[in-house]
Amino acid sequence: MVDLHCHILPGMDDGAKDLSESIKMAKKAVDQGIHTIVATPHHLNNKYENPKQQILKKVEQLNQALTEEKIDLKILPGQETRIFGEMLDAYEIGEILPVNHTQYILVEFPSGHVPRYTERLFYDLQMSGLIPVIVHPERNQEIIEQPEILYQLVKKGALSQVTASSITGDFGKKIKTFSLQLIEANLTHFIASDAHNTNTRTFKMREAFDIVQTKYGNDFVYMFDENAAHLIEGQHVYKEIPEKVKKKKLFKFF
Image (cartoon, rainbow, N blue to C red):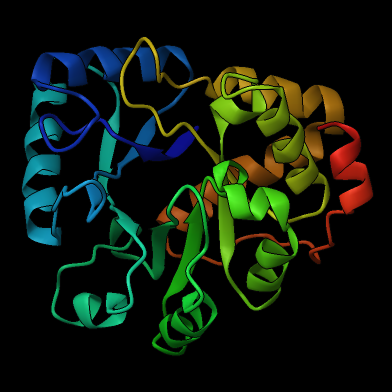
């Protein structure tokens, strides 16, 4: 299993505080059946600044530590970048790091809204050969209230990634319900942990996939699993035609 979104690098953001905590997270990941993790420290969120070269150095150091500890886990470089208007400029000067040097770039929205310039920025990114992957849209208040926003972005070429802990209900029943609705409407393409530690924000990948298998069958499990594997290789991912989340259905559960 590949985990595309994890804060396992030590001392970079609100994830692992030090190397010992990174090692604990690595062991937990292996127990979950994860063999590859994309390390995605926050960039430009809550004043964290983790540009490309800094991340690459830390990934190399953590891989070396895992080898010494004989932990069978591979760390790949990535970055969770808070959306800002000059993202393309920052990419062109080498500050933005796509997942494992592919064309896929993880983009985080503010928790309460989606900036008005998002559609134009995503267009510009795609015209430059990049594919934006919206992380945890199920936890964005404006998208919850107006799923049409996510539908339009996905329809125009963006991808999205739902958090495993959202599917398992760790963020509450409403977030769980909405996460499943995004899956049903083909508005999300990946499941990742967004793990920050081994206690309050851990992996929950196996549990999330069990829920998906029970509700939707093995085809969905294979799709999410294979999409993550394709993404880290820079290959095309599997996409169904997106559908609109019906507000009536959504508010029935709220």
